[in-house]
Image (cartoon, rainbow, N blue to C red):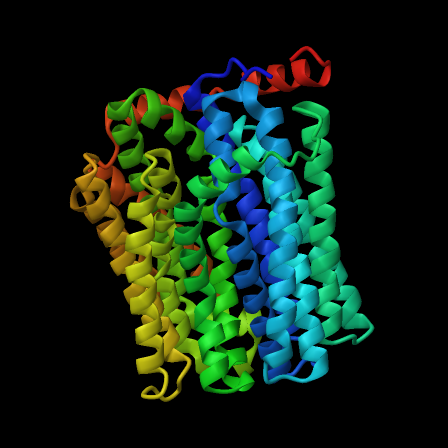
Amino acid sequence: MEVDAMKQSQRIVKNAVTGIVAGVIGGVVYLATTIAIARNPHVTVPEFGKYQWVLAFAMIAQLVADSGLPRMMIREIAKDPTCVAKITGAAAGLIWFISLIVFLIVGVLSIFLPFDRDMKIAIMLMTFATLATFHGAGYSAVLRAFEDNELNYVGFIIKQVLLLSFILVMLYFRTGLIGFVIAHLTSNLALWAFYHILVSKFYTKVKLQVDLPLWKELFLTAIPMGGGVMLRQLALHIDIFVLGLMTNMQTVGLFGGPYRLSWSLRTIPQTLSLPLYPLYSRTAHFSPQRFGEVYRQSLKFFTLISVPFAAFFMAWSKPLLTLALGARFLPALPAMQLLGLGLIPFFVSCLFQYLFAALDAQKSFFSSTLVGSVVRVILLVTLIPRYHPPYVAPAIAFVCAEVLTVGMWIVQLNRLGQPAHALQILWRPIAAGVVMAAILYLVLDASLAWKLVGAIGALLSYCLVLWGLRTFSSEEINQAREGIAFVSPFVASWTKKLKGDS
């Protein structure tokens, strides 16, 4: 399979545009799913907390299983597309082997958890559901390696819509926690099947292979990256996990509300960072100087898009929380404001797993991530007993750990010969964001009409300040203009593929 003839800038813009659309749609649908459960009168706050805890536990199990394997698949296929059949077949077999081991381990662990039988059944089913996404990720790695991310995003949106639909059905029949878990399981299995069909049709027929030497090579190269990614994602779930062990499900439910609201926004940077990995892999391997330029441009872009979200989340946290989840979640307002502040380092953080993997510097990524994760756990254990209400503590730990971890990653890359010039990149978006937040705060208590006027004015002021501070270089403007012209080659590329000419 040959990569299409689109220019690199056009592929990036194409994937960025489709990624933004998918991120917004997926984020809105995920938000609607959270709201549907949280606002349902038959779902209590403790029951909502149970659902959040089971989901967090199962996601941890998936992260242990993942081990960075899909990321290594993307890197190897992006460097040598001719190996797609061999890599995909061997990886699929390895994924089955790892999944079985993890599922058995979770089954044993669930026996000793201090919960009732229904909760333990829910944990097992949710683990199976999240492991299905591991299998799906193995196939979507092929789509991402060939930079056909639009297919990956279509699957993502389909999965989110199916999940919302199944959740609404379960709420109608009042099935409770087990019903929510079945909704996750069904939608994840559908996603797995969808990606498998796409890969088989457009790229290669997938035959499971037991290739022990290749398994060993993939697994050993994936372990440091997988360990770092596991710790990274574990940190994003550990707040709810520790809070549930140290307090009660009422507290977990109150924190889980605004936390899942912020989580809906996180799909945007996670989606946008995916298209950059193949580019990172190629430039790191063939042109280190170009890699550094792409790294700094990515850092700037992700900072630019994060600041407006953070400004809205912090300045308008009260009306957003009330509108989305209802007045019963208003006690968690301080936590929501802090989570909004943490969106800036989180958006930027989504880049680094791919940057380190492209440089084959997984061990550096793992060591920095380990330090940040340990600090986060220490902050959680230390602050939760001392803060009243206790759900503010995880928000503080989140912000502090995110800033520390991103800072360590930037230092590590600087030592690898890739300076970020972070202060030069960051100060302009942050200055523009302060102006934007001030305008939003001024219209916080105004009527709806004035709120809309204020929101538009705040966004315009953000853009004008960025322009006035000369944030964009002439080269970046030219690349943006070139990339915008992706539509015609994109259509031509897929016309060729659908005709079977590629």
